[in-house]
Length: 159
Image 1 (cartoon, rainbow, N blue to C red):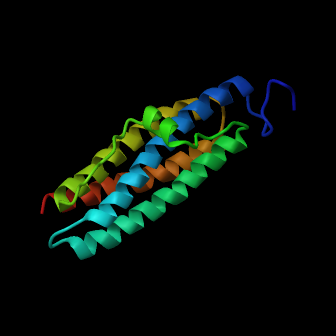
Image 2: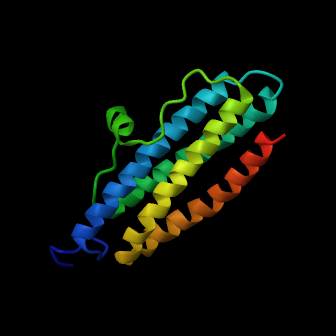
């Protein structure tokens, strides 16, 4: 290992760029997670029971992904963002405040996932250029799941 490579043998400079991009993803996931917690708590109406449970599934999954992203940044040798200020300034996803309507809530989930997928797809070329199979595999798994979720939630919205 030289001073030009990380602890896992990747180019240090390119890894720094990748870590920055992953931190952007992390910030967006944190807003997505918190929004989903709020949806879980505040949902009202005839879809309460199904969506209350579904939002818990979503935020639990997001929490796991947040941990995986942060650990990947650490594996690359960098520090994950960890303050609300950093999350708010680095995220494209905005706070979803006081949303209790089912359609508005599910639409926020769809919009957030679409934003997250775009970020992930933009990270893939950086990871590929670095030959970082760990990050590529992680994001590919996320995208596969999220594309299906977008289809399912979008179908629900057309009811």
